[in-house]
Length: 481
Image (cartoon, rainbow, N blue to C red; front, side):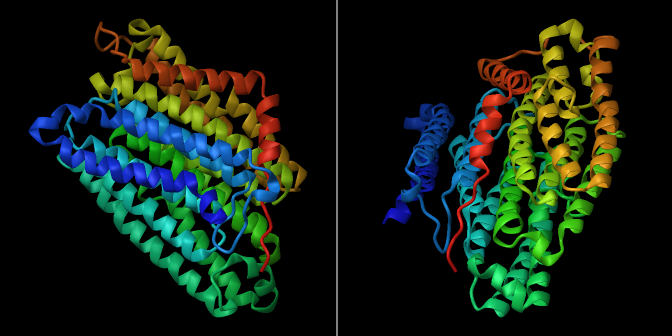
């Protein structure tokens, strides 16, 4: 029972999601039609309540925390659960001011799918058994497939969702195949026996690990498992694009850290070089292709691929500093990427998502243009912003771990990224306005932008409290075999 108590945030959020699904069916009936406007706000409150329960679990004495055969509740799991729920709250908040060209109904189902996806990610970040990880992976995938195609009247949305589903189904099969190899080597699906199995059945465990990397690389949008990203991101509702670019990526990377940074260190299997190569390929491909994009959603999609490459540096180094840098950059990435997409929603609501829609934005709305510049500079790693602090830790970990080539490639990629981020800035400040009116900003968009901007500035200017929180969170419990 104590073990189930440790999963109270997931149980609470699942119950709320089911309640929203039930409320959505009743909201469409004529007597209760007004309830439809309340359901999105209830989804935000449910995620906030779940975050409160997660924070309570963080205050539980260490001897009362759990690390069992299926899941672990440790500081790192708590950290990523808070990030996932924070992303959900921001996305649900942004959705309230999103004006779809193909209006969708079922607000309860929309919120419930986001919440169920969050439940899957919360289970994934703490999973210590491969079957639980697979079930969590599937819960995230199925919810994401539906959300990506939620604007069913838009052909691009349907196309992106189909591509996402097909590649996602393939990645699930690959991951399940890898689990079968691991089970054949160990006779169990628990990761507690991973290190011992690697010593006695190294070829089978190595093969299983490679299949897991492929499956999780799909969710984290690592190159060359990224093919679904541009079309799925472009076709999905923009708040869902924001969600897909942040939360599933962070959850998949958190599970990779738990497996290959703790339970089965990649050094045991000699995979450190592979992770370094994946990081270099991912950041280089994402940045180079982003240079030629004229659609802001696609540009930010390729940018998110590159950002996954930077985050992967923390896993490739395999040391404590790399893990701390990974956690810190994940926090910074949540704030700056959500902020950039919030501006994209504000502009796209009226002018679309082509780069030309940003022409003269500074003349129409100087505040919005300055905020977008702030988020883009942070994504590029310019001081004194959050992105710079995160990259500094990651690059320092690469140098300290002897990954000189990885550090050099990462710095060069950061320089390249400045070019395509500044393309948006040039359109905002040095082009003639496409229309005289400023984009309309609702309460939800304004509050989201303010929160993201404050976080980016505070983390960049005064990082000490965040660094201290990350150091205490970069701890994983060891489970007995």
